[in-house]
Image 1 (cartoon, rainbow, N blue to C red):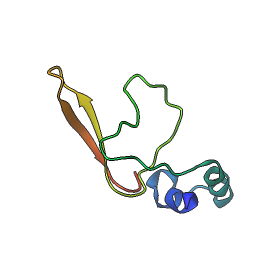
Image 2: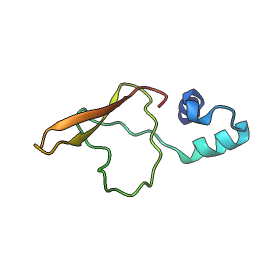
Image 3: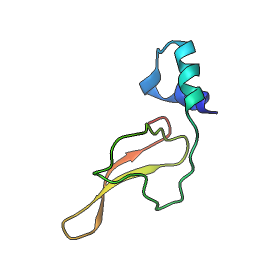
Image 4: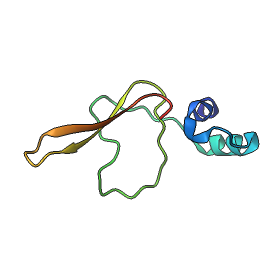
Length: 77
């Protein structure tokens, strides 16, 4: 499952197949509940996330405290 998702992601196009299998062996899938938070702006980057299905909205809080959508990610991104 992880290898198939990596192969679909443009970021990994053209990488050596052996490297891809090695990378996939370290990966795992994670399901999110709609409306949940994946990370906060000040979080340390410790993972690489790829959208496998559905949509992921990247948003920030406005000065008035409202959530403002900044970017929409689709499968493969």
